Length: 212
Image: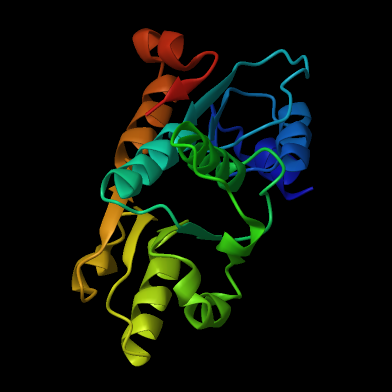
């Protein structure tokens, strides 16, 4: 309803939508009568037919997670836990992509995945309690990584490794220092604007699916 009102009142030439789930994507795709750039919007399908262009810009979350897990394995870790929001683990989205990359890296190194090495975002205390089960963690965000690092310090745990995503401003203030993956947010925003202002080369790049 709000989108319809905004569209009727302001008549914007284009829109940028960030992190929409399938249902919201489908609703906006049907409502908005203008070009739309969807950023970090993972979908089960994009079968809707519309009269206005739709563009998609992503991080390659699968690849980033795969490489991060591979790095931990190369540093001698074989018991690697995954800490993340539970929502989206089995459906299209950032969590699913990162979890799939993590699993792929384990499989390629002949490391079996165990459900007891997955902790959701509300289980930081459980992850600390069960720290003997793993030597490293792949965390879905710097915020979760920060929670884990602080909890480890509180319990005197100093023998764990961790990699996370976001490269948030506060990550450099954590102690010990956090290894974190930059998500190129400025670059994604720049590409989205280039598309909407008519940069034909960028439009061609992101017409189907463009990874930053």
